[in-house]
Length: 172
Image (cartoon, rainbow, N blue to C red; front, side, top):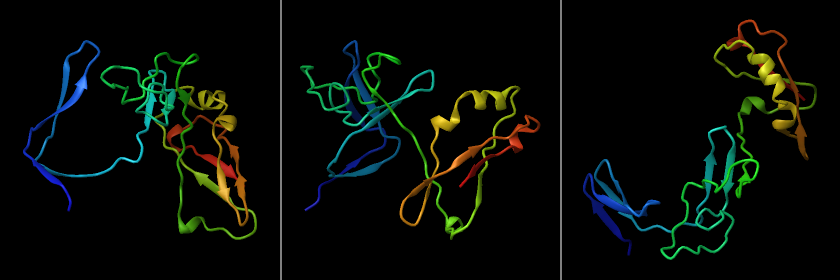
């Protein structure tokens, strides 16, 4: 037997209280049917005003890492905001990444050049700024090999002319 609840448009949902004790309410924007579910884990990713990311692998805890919640009402920070920011943050720095996959990238033996193109808004000094960010040590590019991962080497464009057409090359 499954439990389903129909909620009319603009139904209010309690979401605890804010820092000054005022009740927080959310509303749904359309009529919805809610079904019983079970949450396996709650994680959070927080971006500060300087673009740094912090992770909370166990967001529903006092410290984002599983520490017991000591608030009488059981409140915890759902968005993972650290109590203090870099460099003395109480949250771990997050490592972000993404994957690109395609049958076109299935490679056999031999040398290949793979280009990943990033279209960037033209800005004076952009290429020098990118080079100053130490992208070689900030980013890792891995290719799947037959038996192990192969780390790619990064190449940078040499000219700032027409920045939005420039590419970053990654060589095997």
